[in-house]
Image (cartoon, rainbow, N blue to C red; front, side):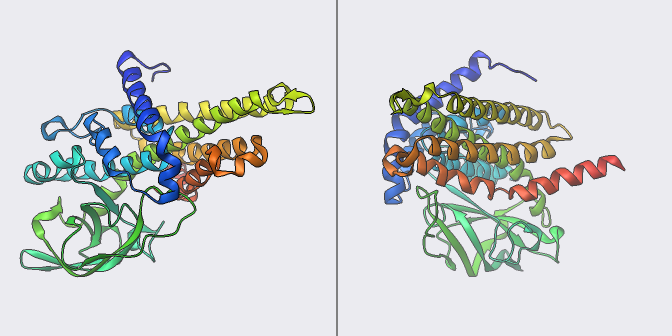
Length: 381
């Protein structure tokens, strides 16, 4: 395990930081207000290798590590957590094709996914199956060379604005063993989308239901064999949890930086805010918690890269800790701004709104505790 970045890692991080500062941060508030999905900017990020960060090189990927990805998503999130988070979801969906697809599937879809000419959404959650993902009900019935799909997915990031849907469907009986994974063209007849949800945050990416009504999908679009879809989904979520944690830390770092700058300028009772010891202690605690979460993220990412047996547990730990810390740091930064923190022009309230959902998605933080507890109890037997 390392506690300092090497030259290549510093270069990767600095590239992403520069892109965030130039291409994302200046527009983040407007994108939030206008509910604008910045596809063209994301495609610019893809020209720098960020459309297929840990995808293999033979299909145009960057072949970087999960550790590299954590650095990139934290850096991008300093400009806008929402935009960074969507790029991370696109990478997760693309990785599932890279890891579980055959050569034909990989070479059909991944070159354009890596450039983000095609953009992907990940479809697992349903109206009645959130944390209990193994209970999903969207059904795919085999009919010759096709599956016929009926059902609905809920809370799907990018839905209606993306090209490919990586969808978990039930092809067999109840439970995780009956789930398979299909890659579906978003324009397939019988696929439709609900209204763009009105949300607390994450307004720079659409969130819609995906509805399947007798949609016919070729059997050749199935990743791997029938019945392994739940395993594919869970494998994707290990990395997804690291990515969303990184997005939390990037947003929180920007909030902390804004608070430090504000406290140097704002005066109360004849003193600058940063001269009050109680507020100095608050800043110190925010920085300590953020650094602890970052160190934890790096440890979990390194474990996933090594295929450590405890990687799933460490990813769950890092996600629970890091997303809680990210939200709390951003919330404290808002408090340090006083009434100005509540105004949109200062950018803090947007970060607070964006980071709140990170404690819910990719598995709620309660589920992260459950994963950790089960691992601990199994290890004690």
